[in-house]
Length: 162
Image (tube, rainbow, N blue to C red; front, side, top):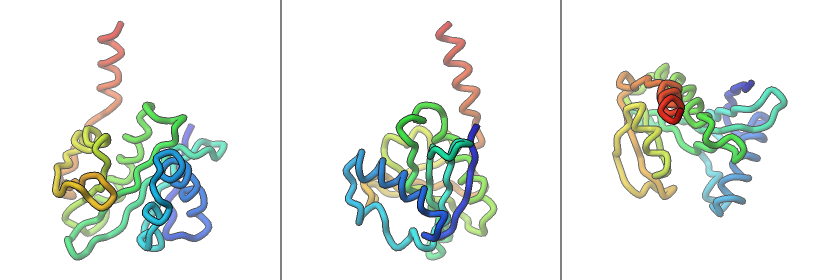
């Protein structure tokens, strides 16, 4: 079983978020700590997904960009032990649900190129190439999110393999 928790800023609730981002982005992927952790962390909402026992599963970050009438999501990370088990889909769904409740016209996502198929299933399209984090800036209108079911596709894959 899993649980989700939202935390704002870099207070006490940020420690497990920071630990997972440090483990995956800095240690595993070689991103400089100064590039991974920035001033936006202090004002952003952070989603932390974990097991009942507290083991980290996934994290994501969301913050307003009022200058472009958007809410932006980034820093999507899934712990190595949980990759390929649809936790990326779960993380994005929870964040999109929250983003649709905000008063912005657009939902943006700064994503790595490997994440593009996931975001495309929800209706995101390219806005800019080569974002500062080395990925792509994507966008979808707040009311244009496609609520596709990844479970439906997983079921079709297992049936086709049998």
